[in-house]
Length: 130
Image (cartoon, rainbow, N blue to C red; front, side, top):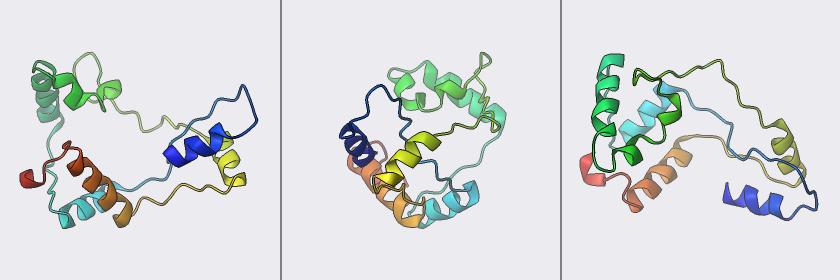
């Protein structure tokens, strides 16, 4: 994303709004396979168990930081309320970046591996908790 921001920052177009994110997707079972190969086994839980975890972490010191990535998808009942019908489009941004020679990478095993390594490096994930 940093490269995309640098590219867009150097354009002479003012007053444009860009939506900078990689809109490529990976299906959950493929992500599960990749994480397993990297030593991270996902624990599949019920909706009720997830609600309990959200409740638990929301009451802990620094709990918000642990769940902030999903907070926008949590409803008043502290349940995940993800609407897969919501589609965020970034066609204008993608088209602009493409004309400037930038394409978002596919989300594949290499991409996920680099991401996990970074999360371990900054201490967000702990390699010994695999």
